[in-house]
Amino acid sequence: MQKKSSRSPVIGLSNHTLQKIPAISTLRLKAGSLSCTAKISATSENIQLPPEFVSLNKSAARALNLPGSRYRVYSVDQDELQIGPVVGIMTTALRNKNVPLGKTGKLFKELIAYSSEKGIFVYLFSPDGISKDHYFIRGITISENSWKAGRFAWPDIIYNRIRFRKIEKQQDISRLLYELSRDQRVYVFNSRFLNKQEVYEALKNHPQVRKMVPDTERFNRSNLEDMLQKYSEVFIKPNHGSIGRGILKIRCISPRRYCFAGVSSSAPVWKGPYTFDILFRHLSSEVFKKNYLIQQAVDLAKYNSRLFDVRSQVQKNYQGEWILTGAAVRVAGKNRFVTHIPNGGRAEVFEEVISRVFPSIRTRQIIDQQLTDISDLVPVILENELGINLGILTMDLGIDSNGNVWILEVNSKPSSFDEDDIRTRHLENLTDYFIYAAQMKKNRKGKYEA
Image 1 (cartoon, helix red, strand yellow):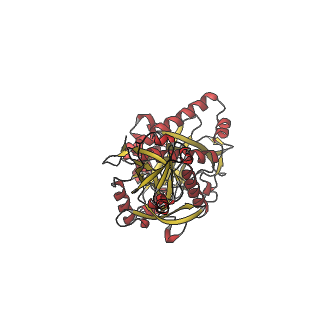
Image 2 (cartoon, rainbow, N blue to C red):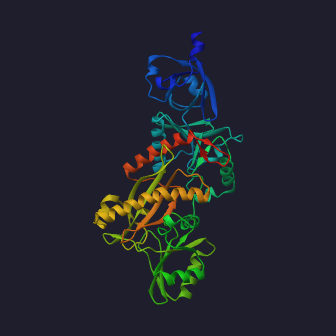
Image 3 (tube, rainbow, N blue to C red):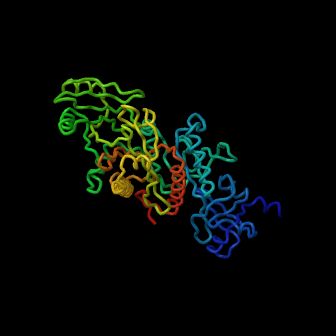
């Protein structure tokens, strides 16, 4: 009899959780799409569990396809406990049955380990790992400090971390993302890339942030001529580009005479001078059949005679509110006009750079207030205008010599920060948001409401 009992699902509850349920000996345990009936153990060891935690014996963990033994209880409903939550990270880093390597692998390991400490189960999966009936997902997670493959429960939350636009645009991936957005069992956030045009159009209609957005138009002859009459320098940017790829800069060097240069790993090579007609002919050949924009070049402040911008990250927290995770400075290489590290840029500490460039305490206070306003307003505007669920964004911000902050780029598929303090706050906010999102009830439009 004892042998049979040890093979049955058994759970231990903390005093905190015991007080929330009726005086019963068994209850329903749910993790993602899976559930089981488990016997409640009343040993003193279990009672000393941290608040909101449950311990599982091997049978209970196996029934729920969970590794490990301790998970958070995020919802209590009479005789049913929902634990975790179960979070699936969609990524293409697992293609061809590979595990994520290098920096990507390290960051995923970091997230899984941090989540585990908070009682959240996270696994990675490729789009082709989803079963045809959308009930199980084949993926990998970290167990005993190494990657382990498994067949896991359909998750409570899916975080889309597909990092390449061309993959996300593939017909089968687009169709899958659409299906997931309509699945009432799961909450999907950061479900797609943003493009520069839609971000600009969304922000320019809001008085609170309109003045912070550089003037932007679609690339064509008429718009280019108008923009060069208004501004001495403009950028030509791919609408769907990232990390500086494909950017060109145009300078007016004398009346109706222009030169331009592209971004490269070495110092830019300026071509020209050209008349407007010849300039447009050259640019047309550079961007032929591509979706490009023309953007006002803001006269940014300089640090040690080099351009710099601010990379900030905003996230939803444990209350679903947008907060500023942190900000860091990226300084351009010598004679460069972009700050991306692959193009010669380097990282600097935000507070140190801002203090040196803007010695006035009053100016620094104004800059800080603008950063707060941007963190509060921009994500909410984008969610509402674009009808998309977001949980995390990074923004490239410029600061001109007067201390005015400009919104240069917004990215829904952010790369990680090298700064340890920002990365730690990122993990804390992200896991807190997992719990918050799992506690919400999803309505038919794919939004969560309490």
